[in-house]
Length: 173
Image (cartoon, rainbow, N blue to C red; front, side):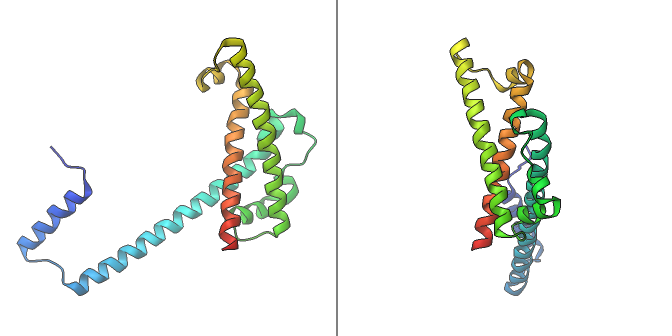
């Protein structure tokens, strides 16, 4: 039986190194530890950059989803139209954009999330009253694709808002 526990594998490796007489000195251990800290820091930076990029994609996706599935908001300009793609990338990265642009983006997202929350909760209450229970997401996707698209958009907008808030808190620290 193969063990998948990394601690066990490292322990076995260390034991075999001891038997072979190739254990590390304290100085070498410190160098290895420093290198591992550096690699963890680089991995963390890459993950943060990926999260920032996904936040930008969510904000850009918001413009098309709003036009396609929410006719009440068709007359309102999207974030992409108000700010432009570079400003959205700067805001999502938490580094650029003026405080006014960030506030505008946040306000736009809050309005969209609130509107969708009210609309979807009303639909869910109507379904619960009509059928006795709300349908699952799978059933909603097949029977009410427009409502399912609103659920998807609601989740995407909430994530974009959360990401924007994290960027704002990170820049104020």
